[in-house]
Amino acid sequence: MSTLIYDEKYRSRAASGTHRTRPGRPNVRLFEGEAWLVGIGALGLLLAAGCAVWMLLYGSAVGAEGRISDAFSFNAALGVFILSTAAILPYSGMRARGRAVFRRAYIALALYSYAAENIQHFRGVNPRFAKNGTVFDETVGILFALVALLLVVFYTVLAVQFFRRRSLELHPKLVTGIRYAMIAVLFSFAAGIWISMNQGRLVGEHGNIMWLHGLGFHALQAVPVVAWLAERTTLTDRARSTLIHVTGAAYVLGLAAIGWQTYLGRPILEWSVWPVAAGLCFLAALAAGGLALRKAILDAGKSSPHISSYEAQYCRRSI
Image (tube, rainbow, N blue to C red):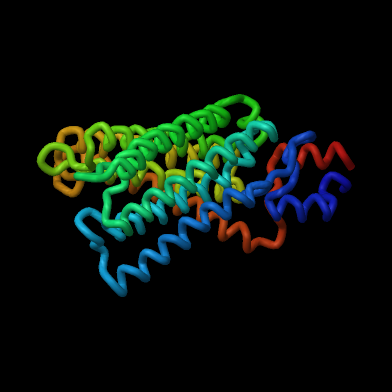
């Protein structure tokens, strides 16, 4: 009879998702200890909102090269990217000192990026490839390229942390999803370098590198969310892992198909092999995510929280 009784305190922690699933495993929350990164991400969204208001009042074009719409997209994208990074950073397994170095570096790099993007566009100058610009404009562009490279370098260091055994052992399901997201982010960074070397987003007749660049970063929201949802279902461990792997692998393969179509200089919105393959991959990822969401909602409505088989055995031994 005692084996069927669980401590109410343990059960409440299981329901909240902040419990220790194994002895000695630290309790970790999304965004934990990353208030500064959250603030920097929120700043990007605030700047994007300001750009949106400006466009409603005065339009997008400023001078010969300034495009407030580009500043809007950049601010929103970088803001969401930093907020997503702040959410998963506590699960990286990095030591406090390593996280502090990453955090401070990304805050400084993000602030320069916001400043260069917005100030230059509002001055009517392309912040990266200024035509007939002054020495100041050229310097801003050179520094912008250096900052972009440093963003890639620091994020690659972070990505490596998620492929170490320490982070996987602490949070196996969520880190598995984050690993796929990190692979997708590297696709995006490669696309960003491609844009810089190409001095523009257009390739061939109709290829547009921005599709690859943008969709890769959205994996930071899509795949870890599915892993987070899967952890909160009553599915078997194998079924949860399958949902996460299907979502992650399909998303990455979809990106690869888009990348190849772009390399060929063709648009991604056409009826040909690679766009169709990419669409099927993203549909598979969406279907797996939908299943995880549906199951998580159904299980949340049950009277008793889900406790994994390992946790149940641990509770029985403790009674």
